[in-house]
Amino acid sequence: MASGPVLQETLVKLSADLKAFEGRLGHRFRRPELLVRALTHGSIASPTRPDNQRLEFLGDRVLGLVMAEALLAADETATEGQLAPRFNTLVRKETCADVAREIDLGAVLKLGRSEMMTGGRRKQALLGDALEAVIAAVYLDAGFETARTVVTRLWGRRIETVEADARDAKTALQEWAQARRLPPPRYVEVARSGPDHAPVFTIEARLENGETARAEAPSKRAAEQQAAAILLGKVSSP
Image 1 (cartoon, one colour):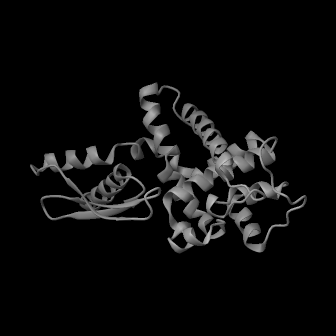
Image 2 (cartoon, rainbow, N blue to C red):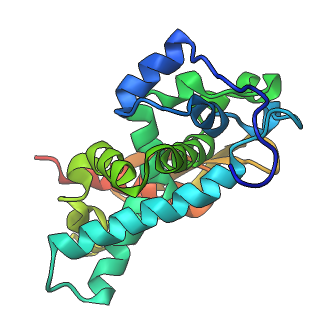
């Protein structure tokens, strides 16, 4: 990169697992040091091995532009008020983490011992951040058109189905309960793990009829939304 610390290697040779990851990602790097940096978490970084935070910052913006363009192209009549929740659904950390899991990004994350011991390869925040960094690495390696191609392929049908996915799960579950004359759902924190700077909350959504569902996320709000979505799927199934 033009400024800040850079990797010391003048020629980085990717390991077999990183080459396999390139295949899952759908991009072969001309500058493989960018991929290495994108996968390097702060827990293992050093002055000669910078972490992926700067790339994450850039990748968030690249992802946002790709999704904004895709939404405008998909619905030429949508208002800003309609587009905003769809956009937020596509770029939120939970979505990025889901995509990261689909390409098994966690398997190639470069983590310090403490993060590995606390399940860092499965943490939603780490996966989402790393995927944004990888998007930035693709952009810097091959330009915006290639980054857009990679992102739209990875997001796939999420872009087509985003209108339904963007519906607020807690609101939808409450409407389901009200339609059946049930009290509003309750959300109970049943567990909290991880360090103070990176907590993981386990929330259980409960309905008066006895139905429940649990979800984990790095914030209570996200965990509540996920638990509501899971429970709504359960009670709405035929």
